[in-house]
Image (cartoon, rainbow, N blue to C red):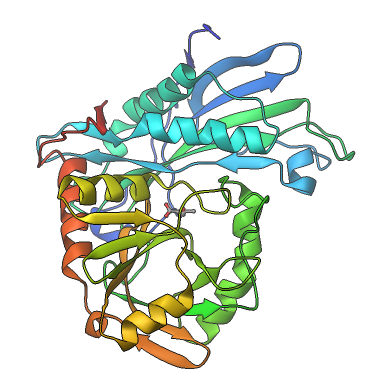
Length: 355
Ligand code: COI
């Protein structure tokens, strides 16, 4: 699609929050990006318009069968005042991979990239500047056809909304307590665990809620077949450091291909450390803890970047990791990624894109 992006600026401006008051995903900017899809036309009428509600027929397919995908990335205001997006092309690639799995028509990657850059540009005053804060960008596609038959919809809406954010977890980078669940699973082989689709998050709520009631921040999911191999932690990829090696479950359909996951593996390998992608049994983690070899456990994700795990509870047993403190590897990864994001350190892999 070569149609230019139409711009309809908002005539009013919302008050902006103070950086210190920012939580996660509660406040939205003045504008949003929207494009429509119809079978006969493809994606059309890309536009930036004032932020506001979508009007949907109650029969709209997404409301019934969750044919929806999204992604999440961030824009940062650097120490030099420049606004940078972190790995936007990689997020566009993932958005289209998720689209494919959900029978959603792909978006021209150039248009998708422009949708992110232009919307952030229009609302650039909303990018907060304190380290730890950013503008979270949420591209989303929903099936918009009013139809109750179960089949891929014939029409879709793509939109991008922006939200100034602080830390994802209220505890910030403080190590979290995690419950290992073997009663519920988030993904199965052949399922949609590898796609960023809304239903995965709805399906995770019950277990997360139970964990919260028991005093944990999140759950550690095990694989859906054997309930034996570690899968993801909450909404994040998981990494364990055993001895000198960092291990994370291999991608292969059940694991979301995290952009932070990829960045962490790249950095670890740049530093000459051993970073391995393979199945890890929860028993291996327990054994490593017993023998004193379990050095660190941490989650990786766009929202929190790195989230150290201070304690795991599995089958009534408590596994305290690194005395409940942030590990050196997790801290170095966090510091390095954040320094690249805020333009404080060189960006040897070309991960950032200035707006
Ligand atoms: C992330 O870690 O970026 C996530 O996937 C969380 C998001 C769904 C809020």
